[in-house]
Image: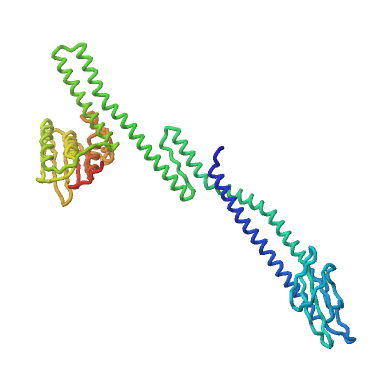
Length: 453
């Protein structure tokens, strides 16, 4: 059995609720109608009797003047009796049984299926030694007829109102869920195609639907960025691995087919260099992949960060000597921190390696290390080519390289690793750069970081 849609469920629930409410209302109306109709009938009966009593008077000949009496009005029959209970004039129902006179007391008299209200009034007539009884009688059948008519109208009106409320509920539900259909259609359209740049862009909807639409649009934006990053990652990784692979294949083929004994050594050196480059690239890719999966195992230890910086600078000076680059340092001694020593060494090496790589021959690289009350601050300044302002947000991406620097050694993973290691240790890394003048990278880390695996 196919499950009912949300629209149908809401419509049925709404219709059922309206049906219950209308049932209660109609029951209350019918219950109240009986009381109201009976009270009105009693009031009409008493008013007729009292109203006609004021018209009773004696003529000069001693007889009652009855010309002004209205013996039948609005279903009320009026009759006049003498003090002994004999009928003088007026109308009484034929089926009405003999009923005792009780002045100003409403009586209910039943005979068979007929029921009447009887109201008597005993009064003295001026100039007459005896009194008279004025009796008003009215049948309750008119009440029952009116009630039955109300019941019939309710019976006819009830299904109409139910159908009307159900149809109205369906239209309201359909209108309320229209944005959901739009969101579903847009999601299916985006999901079935390859264009993740499409958005739902819902307008003129309720606040809740607008929030849902905006949440979906935000999710699609993140998915688009993730897929773009994955495509870019695949393209860049393929590009970076293609060059050393091509060199290895070419050198191996040359060594096997044409090279002499001494040339084979040279070919093997080139193959080894390219293989080592691929190995470093794969190691970095593996580390970043493990970082993304939160599977990096690191050791937190307390060590002398100043001493670590000195060791890294010694290695940097050897690289800088090949380009006649001056390396200056200003390191505050005995700066102890807690963190993963291997990862922090990689961070410093990447920053200094980048500084040497992008600084021209005869340039300068400066390194400073300072301790504040609760953190350590490292700065690496170079006099290289600098970075354009629009490129600054992009340099932290994996495999990203400035257009003018493509082809240099490296795969564009260094700064992305720097940022990851900094974040891992609860720190930050930032850059200030002026094209043609150089760049300054600043790394700040707490002395006792709360490392985030």
